[in-house]
Each structure stands twice: as structure tokens, then as C-alpha cells.
Length: 473
Image (cartoon, rainbow, N blue to C red; front, side):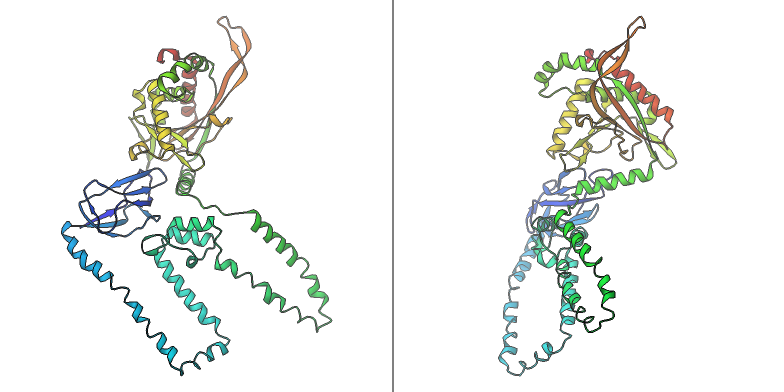
């Protein structure tokens, strides 16, 4: 017998959501055969079976989120199949509780118990026992709900009993809750405040027989009820709660963690991209015809960064305890926007061994696979320095948050035509219109000081402005 556990799909990944089981209980499975699909804040991945045998138990249904290392299922030996047969036979007689319902008509046939329920409606304490079974059912439901599902139900004021579960054994999954939110499912809690104004109307006849105190309460209801009702109506009709998806939630947690542990500093330099722009104009048509995609400014920037990292090794490092771990491999992370669904950072491995065209191909390939959710674990781990490409949105300067455990992140902001002062070989100055943009680098002040960060960024700037880029195309 072998346990199937939630795998570690990335250095900083701590949990995953089961999105699909490819095998069901009783199915045979081979070693390395795809068993289930898991979604994390970094990647969606198909996970192979760690052992051969028969899937005897599924402990985590589709839609539930569990921590890394949690047991998801159990695979038994192939010989265990005949043992499972009597179990299935024992499952068939489970509908036997239907004859067990026969005692229900027995009290109905007896005339004696009929007067017994009469004292129950006569007693005003009837709502008290009604609340007890409700609490009991809540406890039963909570035992069947994952922490993520419970949190979503609580935050959205939903009634678990009103949600139809589609998981194993009728359990409510995260998708069921999100569907209920979209469908506008109402909570029993939201229904409770509705009868609240009715008892509020009961004290109104009380001040009527008292003529003297009448003016005093008259002053109190004026500020309280009218504005309160108006505000609650405005909030209820003009707002909605949108639950974070897994990527959004985990990205937020990473960013909060990074800001908490790393003293962020920002260094910005203006770059004259005119030389790069002219090379692109000359070669962009032939490049697109040969490669099948456009040549942007980003590969040039990555190439310049990679060269500078060789001369400024502390930029390609991680804070570790009381020191700095300097990485010899240069693995460049490129932040990719998933069109509103979140952010992911695939990695160009060994970028220091690539020239301009190879870097451009890697960027295009990783971006395409990121948006189609086709990245593997190796594609999103091991980064040593990250670039956040905001230039396509026309940004001016962006203070990005460091991707831990790295020590710096470089934002490549918008490039636009602006007037600049240029000098000829004789030192004469003039005004020209060039393609200009900012490089903004957030860095961890624990790792080095401002002079080191500025020296690195200055070299990146000089490489972009002075290199003969045509030689690499």
C-alpha cells in the first residue's frame, strides 16, 4: 500500500488545489501514469502515480486545497481487488435504511402520540430546540468542509445547507461555493436581520401612553433610522465581494512577506534607447518572418542585465541567515501577466550562455506557455534575478516588490519619444528626439548599499546605449 501525497511544486509553494482526478476508486494505475491534476499559485501540473496498484481511497476530492505533504489518496496492491469486491457488495445493501423508516409510520398509526406534540406548539420555547438541530447540522457540515471552503462560506455569508455539493460523497468543493456566489446564493444570516425591524416596531406603542417622555425619543429616531437605512441600501446595491483565486491569494501573501522581511530601496535611471530602436527598425521585419514573433525591447534589456550580473555578483544572490548566498548560475525570471488572473514568473535558465536571439526565443516561449497554463515545475523555479516588464502599459516608473529570496527586481517601464540633449564628437550639444525610458530597480538593503545598486544599473544603461546590437542579429 502506498500513500499519494501533495507534491512540492516549486520552492515557495506550500499548498495546492486538486482540480481533477484521472482515476477513480477501484481503477488500476501504473507507476508514472498520470493520476491527478493540481493547481498552485505558480503552475497547473499533472502529477504521476508514485506506485502501481489499485486506487482504494480518494481522501481529497476535486476542488479542495491542502498543504504540501498532505495525503491525497491510497494505492493498494493489485491483489487487494478481490478484497474490495465484498466491500462494494456491502455498499449495495446500504439502501436497507429505507425499511428502517417503517417505525416512522408506527407512531403515526398510534392515536396516543397525537396529543404529545400538542404541548410542543403550546410551549413558547419552540424556537430553542429549533436552533439546536441547526447547530448540530452546522457541526456536521463543518466536519465535511475543507478550511478553504469554510472560509469562503463564512466570508460570503452563505448557508452551507443551501449549496449542492458535487464532490465525492456530496461534499461541497471550492468551485461549488464560487458557483453559489455567482448565482447570488443568499445566507441564512442575511435573512435574520430582515425580521429585526419588526420587533423594533413593537416599542413604538409603549411611548404612546406616556405623554411626557414622548418628545425625548422623538429626537433619537431622527438621526438613527433614516441615514442607517440609506447607507445599508447603498452598500448592498452597489458592491459585491469577489473572492481571490489561488494565484491572486498566494501572490498577495508572497508580496506581504517580501515587504515585511526585506528593506526595499529604489534606484532609477533614464536610458536612451535610440540605438536599440534603430536596430529594431532595420531588422524587425526579417526577424518576425524568420522567428514568427516580434522583436521587442525586452530581450535587449535582459541581455544587458545578464552581462552586468557577471561583474556585480551580489545582485545575483539571496539573503540566507546572516549572510549572502551568491549564485553562479544566472537564471532570469520574467514576470508574465495572466490577463487578470494573476502573475507568474517563468525562468530563463543559464541565460548567461545565450545571445540576443536565444533570449528572445526563450521569452516568447515562456510567455506563451504561461498564458496557456502549460508551464512545468522546472520552468518556474530556480530564478536568481527578476524583470517585471511594465513597459507595454506605458508606465513611467514602477517600484516593484522583490521576488523572495532574490535581492533585486528590475522594472522595465514605458519607452517614448522625448527631447534629449546630445553631443557630437566635437562636444557640441543639440536637441534631438530619441526613444527614452526608465529602468527602476527595487533592491534589498540587507544585501548591499546604494552605490553597489547604482553601479550595476549604470552598467546596464551603458550597455543598452553603446553596444553594437546589429552584430547579434
